[in-house]
Length: 224
Length: 291
Image 1 (spheres, chains in turn purple, orange):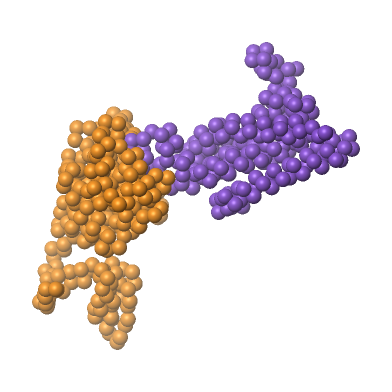
Image 2 (image 1 turned 90 degrees about the horizontal axis):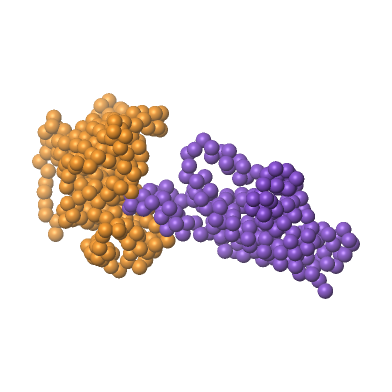
């Protein structure tokens, strides 16, 4: 009987990561879309770094940073009882960093493309920045928000390098589908590798088909 | 009295220039800002509203100081009690007409004002529509309505009618006049349209390259006293033809074209697209009532 736990774990990881990313990315994307700060290019670069770097680089440094063998990792362990290497929490953190551009970019570009006058007319009507964001800006960039959510979810599902570096291969804890496939192939269990792979292909296809169908015109705008 | 004394370095199409404007606006009237594109008219509105910060100066409305660079006072736009109608309407696409107006409601206000404004502005039948389904004129009517819901002391309008056709424009001018009279707001309006200025303005301020070049009543600003013209119109040159020593100039005035014959040497500098004054000095025009 095939072990479904890697698939379930993959979904759990993608869901938790997407929720955290969403909460984190709204203020970050809003700041990036409207700031004139000199820091902006640096922050934008940092956000986009995972697009360029091999995931192993990120995984390697996270592994070093969170290892209880060094002071920061030890401090986290002692103070919060939080061990971020070879644990689900560590995977979530790694995935958040790794999928950050996939959430921030669509939301930022959605906000940037809204006419400036929408924000300004809300301000002159006496509304604060926060009220303006929640009631005027975000409701008018729903397609971008959906794109960000779906892409982050899908991207986290497809993650391999970061997970391998800081998560390892612990059943029910860090063995996500992509790792399980690798593991099965190593053990020459091609049958199970096929099952995991086909499930991932179908899910990825379904998600991308959904997003292209729902929001074709918007998707093109920033993807191409 | 609204006192405006502002300077600001602006980036224009022909490089940076300094906007330096001093004007006193009487409360409860319609003041028009006019002048060529890029003269700084919109920037003046933006600085009054708090959306743009002047480099230096004072903005006072009655006894309220909205901006004072010396005293480091700069009220945010949220606290200035202004209505601002943007050229591109800026209606919130996610809200219906009624919700757009409701969004403008201030905490201290009675919600009944919304029904009142919807009634006055003739929006009863449109109140549940989303802005996407409205025509340009309807959108502008909603934008104007939304700006007056909070009963602003000062209503700023940035070429609100320029994108509309003539009939719609005249209707909205009437609405604007009506609102200004019933609510006694101080209106500052940016427009290029001279007939609009004559129709609405109590006071005209003409700005060029960031400097006020002329101010007064529409008659004082736009009538050339040296010209004893019996009538005069402004229009745009659409066609130039030369025949021997003569030049036939076709001018578009409103929706009519008029051909004027002139001396070639006198009109050598005219180009298509120039704004010109067409006046008659010698003939007594015919006047006939239209049924």
